[in-house]
Amino acid sequence: MSLLASSADTRATGLIELPARTARPRRRGSGLALRIAGPVVLVLGWLWASASGTLSPALLSSPGQVLDALRELWSSGQLGDALSVSLTRAGLGLALGATAGLVLGVLTGFSRLGEELLDSSVQLLRTIPFLSLVPLFMVWFGIGETARVVLIAVATSFPMYVSSSGGVRNTDRKLVEAVRSFGMGRLALVREVVLPGALPALLSGLRLSMTLSVIALIAAEEINSTAGIGYLMATAQEYSRTDILTVCILIYALIGLAADGTVRLLERLLMPWRTQGVRR
Amino acid sequence: MSGTPATATRSQPAGQDVAPGPATAVRLRGLRRTFGTRHVLDGVDLDIARGEFVALLGASGTGKTTLLRILGALDGHDAGTVLVPKARTVVFQEPRLIPSKRVLANVTVALPRGARTRETGLRALREVGLESHAKAWPATLSGGEAQRVALARALVREPELLLLDEPFAALDALTRLRMQDLVGELCRVHRPAVLLVTHDVDEAVRLADRVAVLRDGRLVTDEQITIDRPRDTADPRFAALRTRLLTDLGVHPVSPKELPA
Ligand SMILES: Nc1ncnc2c1ncn2[C@@H]1O[C@H](COP(=O)(O)OP(=O)(O)OP(=O)(O)O)[C@@H](O)[C@H]1O
Ligand SMILES: [Mg+2]
Image: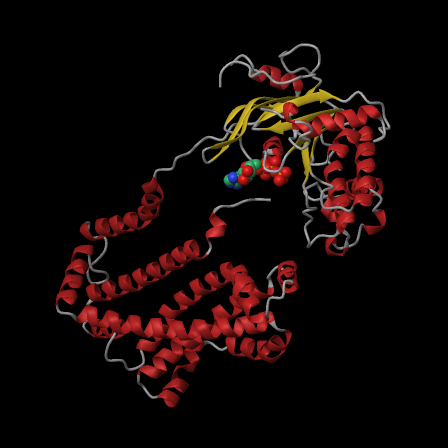
């Protein structure tokens, strides 16, 4: 192209040439491959450490032993049962806690009265470490399922509360003013403008709540439980079965990973307007 | 892209495609930008000389903002050559002030801190007549005032190329006239090359040295305005140029035979 100014010209005139957009058709798998690379390296390191004897089996079983333990637990049905019990506890607690946090958060974020009434009390309760509530809950609810679910619900409600009240409070006031002038009622306003606007905050709150739900699950399953992953771990600990302990830890990790993936998916599904960024 | 796309009535200095000289501020050749499968800009050729004020007209959705964003390096192009000076600033349709910074801090944003920056910031505010608002929060400004702050923010950087994307569109008619005068005057003082994107034919003719019309992805008109300043809408040459530009924009279907094919 004769029209292109050579770089010498460019320098002489003090102009710079802007580069054209380079079409970068990222291969579909490459993002996924990069994500998987980290865990794969970790497992390979573990394999090598076990095989070379650096890692004594008394401290941590080798990947092969862990796999055997997994197969054994799975075929005996122990793992399936434990998993379903634990997931039910965590899911139920999370659903209750996140909903409570969301409702309270929207109330305090959206209405002045709500904030004045609720915020200081919730902030006060929030500073109590939820683990310290375990003995009290056992007195109140006995040692049954209720105490466990309530503990998880309490633990998960606070991050959701903080994120949602902050997100709702940061709604674009001009937008609220504009739709109000079209005669939108308060409830519709919350549903159609405020909540979608606060979604990024809500989802990051959900992310934190999900992490806490697993932590609270572990705490809850220490309460004299007779089923669940925590129970499995307690038994394994008695017999020093590091392979089973490792299986349980890996399962906790996988639950966390699945939770994170769920939120990612929700972000994509619930906020389609964010992916097609129009910056103006 | 092959060869030189012929462009209507180019009125660029003497030669057709001489290499850019020290007097060139912007050079576009065969510029193309594609969204999906649609070529929004398709073969735009444009030269702007240093200190020259060019107005770009075009119907809604013809790609004026896209062109301006490419010149500001806010968006990329798909094909063609884009030569621009290093110091470029943009005034957008909305003020885009940072709500958490006071007016003066907004003007001097991203400049090195210090007494000298403060002084140049205040001078720029004085030029737009807002020195007394230096400590105000952006939310307390009126629309026109906020836009003037945005103008001061663009000018304080001594740009070689000033990009204006319908900066007066959201203002009332009176303020708009005042702002046009202000911009005209400030550009005469600071002499940046200016590209003003606008819908308003009168505004373009009042302010610019040259006016271009964008249609179907390319510049269909690009001509020097020879009317003496100050330009008066009552001037018959003003009216004639306005009619011609409106026709190019597809607005004045006077008689069927004058309609573009
Ligand atoms: N990010 C984007 N994705 C897809 N299409 C886009 C995008 N940005 C702009 N377009 C399309 O490109 C075309 C030109 O847009 P542009 O904003 O440049 O128009 P414009 O001439 O500035 O219009 P107006 O005068 O209304 O501001 C429009 O039809 C628009 O739909
Ligand atoms: Mg535009």
